[in-house]
Structures are given as structure tokens and as C-alpha cells.
Image (cartoon, helix red, strand yellow):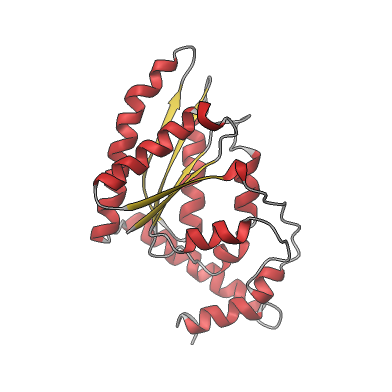
Length: 222
């Protein structure tokens, strides 16, 4: 069981979001998972330019650190996404990473994976960022098991009990992976997304050769 944590805060060791991501990983590790932490802000990931070569060939034209991170994500059973709230959204580094994943959405490459999200905020919006990150994971095909959002305000000690909740979230994530738990509402979402993406890929089969072949080999297109 492999679980990958991705921290999107640029504050390095001072990051309160990092503390939550690490707590989730610690909890998952205590439940038997192999864990790895990646600080996405230390990677060189360029902006997506919408060329759609990834749909055609299954690889990006940009030569940067994204491909290695992407392979780690595909090789993981569970993914933890963490970002502070920067003006009502995730950090630029996390958004840049996500924007490079159109191929994964089209092919629903996270089906069978599990995930969760954590976020911190100075005044508000942490829960909204958690909801957004979990929505992205579900859009990619993963089942999500929950999230932790913490508004720190003027009290840095608020993070301490949140770390305990994050630890338990990590244990929950590992259990869900081990038991291959399913969630009816999310299964409906996955089925609807598969229908949408199947139709999209089929409509573009003359150009998106990689994605069409992926769906054929997966047995999702007759």
C-alpha cells in the first residue's frame, strides 16, 4: 500500500499545511502504509499551454519535474493533497500541477485509488479549499475519505488538535484502501464521469490516439 502526500505550501518547514499533510502520512504509516512526502513547491512544473499533445501521445511536451511526480501519483494507492488558502483557492503551485493532468481526467486514471485533502487558512476558506481538492480527486476517479480544514486566526496552537484529527484521517485512508471500501454517491459520480469522458474521447478518437487506445485496452470501449 503506497500513499503519496503532496504539500503545496511555499513556506517550507514553517508550513502549517505541511504539518497536517505529515500527520496524515504518519497515521497512514501507523496503519501499515508505505508513505512518501513531496513538496511540490520545490519542483519545476511549467504551466499547461492547452496543446493537447498529452491526449494524442500520452506524454507532455514540457521537459520538467511533472512527469516524475505524475508517475509517483499513478503508482500510489492513495494521495493526500494539501494547500493553504491563498485568496479563496489553492496555491499557484498546486493549481499548476493540477492543470497538467487533463490526460488523467480524460482517462479516469485514478479509478480504484483513494485520497483526502487538508488545508489551513489565516482567517477563512480552509474548508472550501479542502472541498475543492477532494472534488479534483473525485474528478480524476479517486474515492475520497474526508478532509481537515483549519482556520488558524491569531492562535498558532489551533494546529495541534488538528494534527491529531489528520493522523486519524490517515489511518482512515489506509483502512479504506485495505478494505477497498466503496461509497454509493461517489460511485454514481465515477460512473457519470466515465460516461462523459468515454463520449469525449470517442468523439476525438481521430486525434487523441493515446487516450482512445487507453480506453480500448482498459475494456471501457467495445
